[in-house]
Length: 280
Image 1 (spheres, one colour):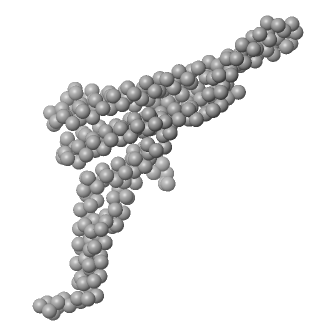
Image 2 (image 1 turned 45 degrees about the vertical axis):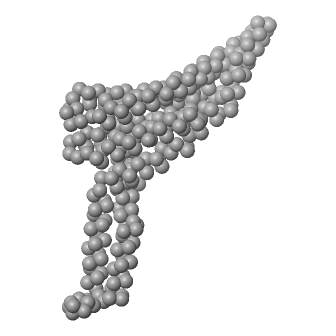
Image 3 (image 1 turned 30 degrees about the vertical axis):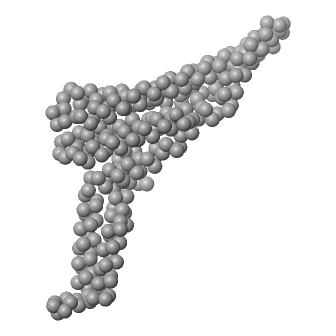
């Protein structure tokens, strides 16, 4: 990847990949294959025409190349083709099958269905209306990317047997340390026990914080799906009068609020999860 590509946002990189995919699709469609095959057959079996003595075999090649070029241009300039390519790559990037938790996976799948519905609406529009809905779709893409990230973090917690075990054992360890401290007479040993208690208490706080964040994440995913469903319904009835209205601005602000909320939850989980005290 070039330095220029590395400076692009994930969304811009996705659209670049989609553009290349659309170009590749244009050459590998059955229409293109049929055009090339017909051109070769005509050039080989019908190199000249009875009523056009000036016709030469290579003219079939030229005619076929023009037809193929027209097919390619028509395909790559078709907004529907571009949206289909982006949707396909988007599903590959944020594949629901990556998510182990069945509830989270179902929510991500539903979010992608909402996205597909909005994308279908975009290609039906033109002019300023299309640009406005495309901007909304781009923001929804950021939203779904955060849903996928959060679902992956939740999977990591569910699959981490050590964390699950620590949540059960650390409170018992802490109680045992306190009992030993009460019974210990040696100042040196008591100091070591006090240090161990502080470490365990910090570990328990981090574990509880992570467990609380998991509960928040579950609730937040449920709420964000309700918000996404509401947005989908609102987008279906938006019209040109709403493009520059307070309603359109409010929709985008609501999307950004949801994205920011998910990002904050992910950041909080990462900070606790990566804490040295959590792993000690």
